[in-house]
Length: 110
Image (cartoon, rainbow, N blue to C red; front, side, top):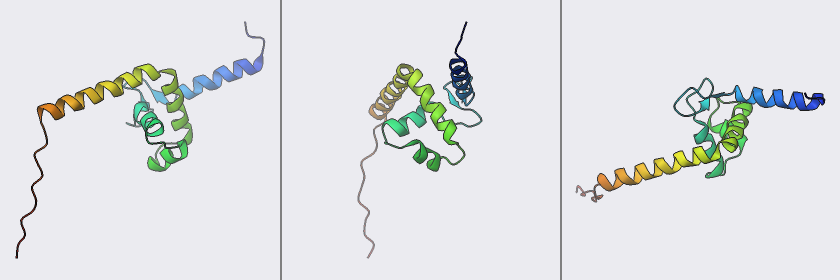
């Protein structure tokens, strides 16, 4: 089947990365945490955070966890981006249905 041992070792390493991700939840999370893969991807993609920055923001994650989450994101990008878009639509609908009250200035007490 595979003649090249490096190919086999590479495939085993890729499988090991997946052990960092728990796909049994409604949305994939970093195993042993409640941090969603989509959150890590959002922090990287839209906040410009590096993997090291993400570990600093979430010290219970390892660098391997973050890289595994990003690898999972790149393999499932369309589905995760669709979740982000659905979340944005839901927020817009809620804001339309329940607008924030106007901010009133404080009255000064003399």
